[in-house]
View 1 (tube, helix red, strand yellow):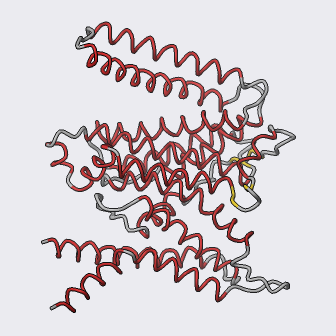
View 2 (tube, rainbow, N blue to C red; view 1 turned 90 degrees about the vertical axis):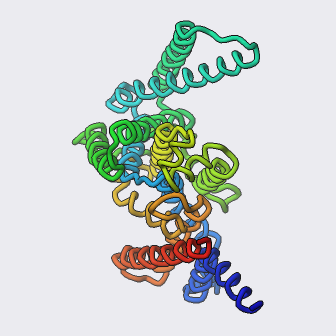
View 3 (cartoon, rainbow, N blue to C red; view 1 turned 180 degrees about the horizontal axis):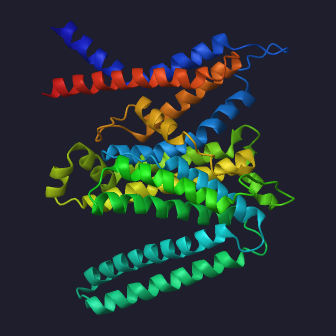
Length: 407
């Protein structure tokens, strides 16, 4: 009896930690099969190669974090690749043009609207705290006037500050504020249509994927589909920081990736919002009957997904020194693959941010290993597809076994 219980505990532990063991096995295979340089250095283990792996997985990892939040609620976001592409185009044009363009025409009103909404929302909550502390309550008219004025002031200030950057061209801080705000707005619009229209996330985000791709092409213009970014010539030199190496080892995009992972993992683990995300994915109707504001939570996760996708667009522009409308082609599939390999259930309610991060790293290690072995580039997506199928089968087995044990 004791040996049987021990075997079941060990089996459950191995199933739950299979992702970590898989990554360790892949790393071992990469080390063993890696070619050696003329100086006798294992190329896979070289600092330059490991830095490149982290740099390459950063964009997909950041997008996968947002996708994880969406999938945990039982949804899907197919528009992340197009939003990332639009972000790269906006970033490149804001960096390289010192006059008003289609990029400013799109981004400035959206930035103003986002700032107005966030400020009005914050003012409303501050007034709630004030009313609770003072034991009084402002009238609806006074609340509406105060929040409206706060939002208007924030919108005007945001527009003025953004417009002031045009003549001198945007710098790294400017694009890190403006571009993600645009992605957040498109993600928010996704969530709004899904929740208020009671439509399937697959259909809505598929339509958004096509629509945003068209917007990216219109903004980029037919004469300049690719906008090159050369710091020090047509763009400010400070943008180079987003592609630099910290202490000549850690790529800055990797730091963004790790920061997003840590903050998002904390959001899910220690906040009420995180508990609501899991509750909605587990049983949306039960969560709604329990008083959870399901629509608000869903809109928030889609907004976060759009925000992170456009942030990845900025990092893409820094890494490849260009912005183009097709920069995010296939990104949504890579992100979904990382999420599923990381152990998140496509049905929602089960999964983790750390798992998705490891899934993204796993895909990066596989791609890097195949490149070092000089395998034909067309075999990389085939290999990733096979791994994705195996991951889905293993996840189905894991969740089914755990459910059976609980039952």
